[in-house]
Amino acid sequence: MADTALTAPPRSPLSQAAGRLAAATRASGGAVRLAELRFLAQLNVRLDAKGAAADAVGLALDLQLPLEPNTVVHGGELTALWLGPDEWLLVGRPGTQRELESRIREAAGNEPVSVTDVSAQRTTLLVTGSRARDLLAHGCALDLHPRAFGAGRCAQTTLARTQVVLVARDEPRAGFWVLVRSSFAGYLTDWLLDAATEYL
Image 1 (tube, rainbow, N blue to C red):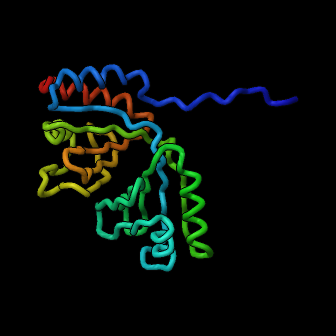
Image 2: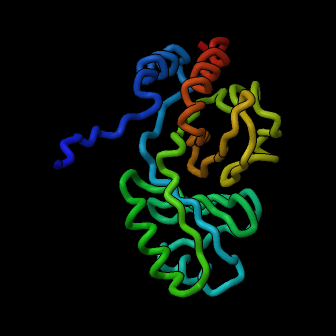
């Protein structure tokens, strides 16, 4: 019997929270901006940072994988986050994960490399505004002062007891990315909206 199941379009775990995020942003008058960045391509890459594959992959992607712990490197529309001595998270435009994976595997050739598409595992919250650091500091144990966690830094940490990857973005007033597992995204969004009340 033929399979008649229809493929449903992807649905964001925060699709029902978009209105509340926009309302909080308007009410804060620039103090806090909260939004979801939907369906970003996310690839977990593991390889020997000192091996031939690292250089080949860097050339294929037109960006060098960061080697300094907890740093971020940008290359065009692609961002590489250092997660460990042999582990990175590549973040790119929605829908580019298959092409990126193919480029990485082709560049690595016979060198050992692991590439895992984790795009559906997490969603990304954008937190910006003049009080963005203060808002995140309410629930994060990291020192978020710009001297300690300035632009171009990233960390695997907890925010409101939820595991996240936190990224301080490079662009002026660009704020932070908070990459959170889809199953915890609703809880973390509720927490952020509640914690932002004092700025509204």
